[in-house]
Amino acid sequence: MGKRLVKAPKVYLRDSGIVHALLNLTTLDDILGHPIIGASWEGFVMENLISSLPDGVTPWFYRTAAGAEIDLVIEVNARKKIAIEIKRSLSPSTSKGFAIGSEDVGATDCFIVYPHRERFALNKYTSAIPLLDMMKELRNIRSS
Image (cartoon, rainbow, N blue to C red):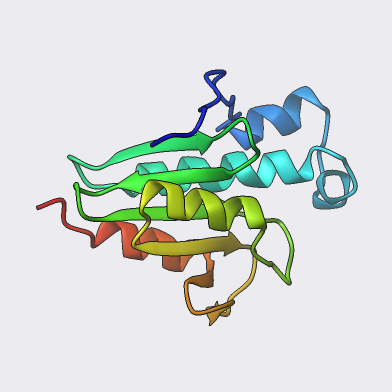
């Protein structure tokens, strides 16, 4: 790949309960009204998706210096890669950076995980999907 990758790792706070406790966010209204909500949701989703992966499957983060970014790439095998973007919006949309990144890594499936119950197509390449549905899909993938 002829792109310049960003080498700085992305830090995820995977235990949202600890984050909320450290910030003294004790109610759902406290959490929903705090600027940390997006990062908290992203860490919560990341923790649940990674814990759903079967053995032999590799998760990673992708970002180029030009701004292409994928929150989570699931490398099932050499032929199958799943690109996942995590959005806290009830009306998620794809970004140019996600589309370019998905093409860069050769993603065979693209999803945006969002906090609602309906699964729907955003375009011919990407679907919006609830967290529980994405977890079920990941549990059922095969690395061979």
